Image (cartoon, rainbow, N blue to C red; front, side, top):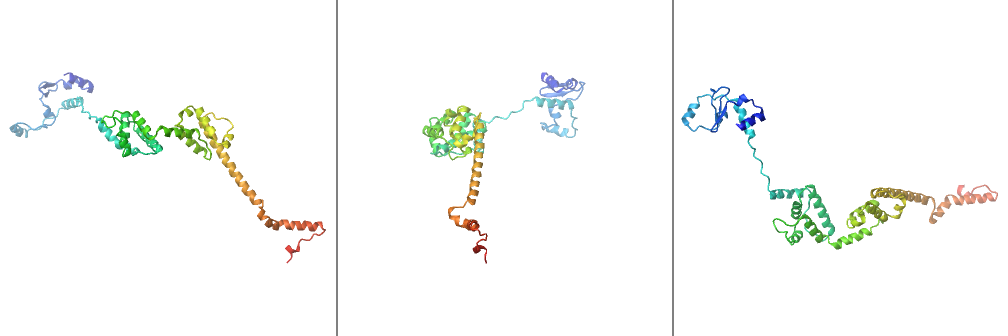
Length: 325
């Protein structure tokens, strides 16, 4: 009766609608508002879903019209069905989730790794793999499993030599993996060489954009040299060509502002060089070269000299060799 009362409170069923309901051994009698009403079972209310156990009664009931459905009883059954706990889907096992996402990692752009002797190639593979794993938001344990699943050939042979790597429940952590991988494929001697390359980096014949690209790529090998924006700005400016530095009159407040100023200075320098080249080309066409002096004198200089010479002698006639027939 407590459950019925709760159902009444939740679904706002009028009390008179349930006062005639009595439960006897899993049978529900609906008496309505008077005690002389008909008695119905769950089977009768739900439409006699189950076949009768007595063949004689079943044949006799075929000629009896079905009883009218009691609306109060139908409402009560619906309430009981809603109150019954619903089956919850079983969560997938941890291994099933891991296995399902192996293909997801590859579809997101992760590449297999067979090993390499080029540290730059190994760095690029690791950077791309970390980017993919961060995108799918997996745990550190899953990162380790997914990364190792991309190994093949020489890389897989190497990984299986790492203590603890063959255990089904891997005892290594993601940080352990990063250390083992970098020690193997990007050894300290390679990192030191890249650090020296950064310390000696100059723009030279590079464009400002190309110089900035190399600066960013190599700066990770010398983090102490660019630990603050001021250090980064000073190091970048010292590597610029002199003609670019001279055009940056005021020291920019940040490394980003310095890059913008350097790009503008480079553009101005390119425009000036182009203008000077055009002017020299034009001037070269107007000024005769030593090999072209005869042609120029034929065009006017010789005639003018003859004309002035004749004037000086009191003669005003031009040379007959040019104008006579």
